[in-house]
Length: 91
Image: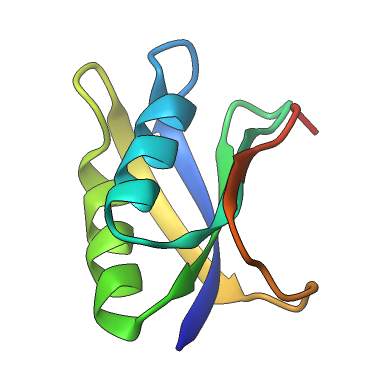
């Protein structure tokens, strides 16, 4: 089991990035969440099998059609356990 927190920067808002992340995470059986941030980045947490989380992180570097990802910055996740995937409001 692996859990990671990501900040994705670049042109990642206004193009369906959150919906794309939700769809991709659900296809991979990953729990967690995604939300836009007021600074224009997208924040996400992925929790699941290590290979599924790793492929999800790699997919975030590409994003959906229209995205121009500048960087994906991973860090440790220190929050509560996760059991499903959800889209959260902008923070």
